Image (cartoon, rainbow, N blue to C red; front, side, top):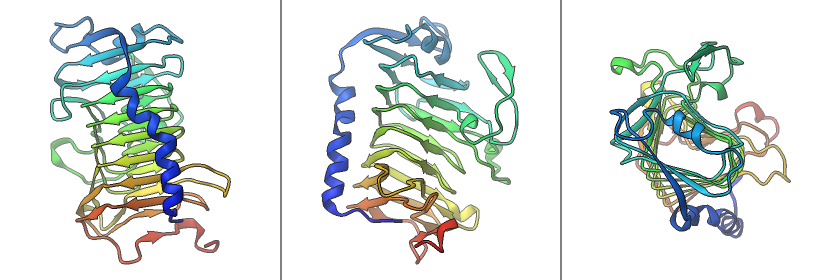
Length: 289
């Protein structure tokens, strides 16, 4: 696990700074309203996403009214320039309960068979570039029903693979592999991210600013905040946590190396959860560090 010098931290902040301005400066061309109670144009989020024209170059705002939306949501690569906005992370939630080995999930009303992998377990997936989310919770409720946490499997709340994605005041809730911060340049501002094992993982080039990382590792005998997958010296990926707060239970490692050149920085952040004394775990790469 390599610590970045402050000079490289500055480069990270500069590279992803365009993500910060997207939500604030974008001119909205069309607004769709989603309401479970039927007062909007659509009752499900996926219906609204499907209505966005393919390969559009104008911002479409999907305003999701308060409520619990039990659906599996996908934004395909062909639908860029979407702003997905809830009424508050405590009020608007998307929840599903797939996990990596269950083999079946329901999408768009039909039953299909995925490839039994972590990525297909996600409650919410965005593959398109130029995406913004505000004030909404993404939750994988696998094995959380009734407050029971008896079994752990890879169960992703959100998969983010599109370039130039930004999240403001959002929440991500799961146990193992909560946020697959996969590929691209991403920015998370004032977000809440909860999990126990590898609950922020992937290959992206990302800044988390002012976020709360809440560990539930104490319920499982220990855990890891991150599993970053940078694979070489020339790989530009890595995670920067700037002015973040780590809370919850432990012992919690700051991260373990998913690949040989994993790169994570905590900068001007506070740790209010029990951190494992070693700090970092080389995982499968102990012979190479």
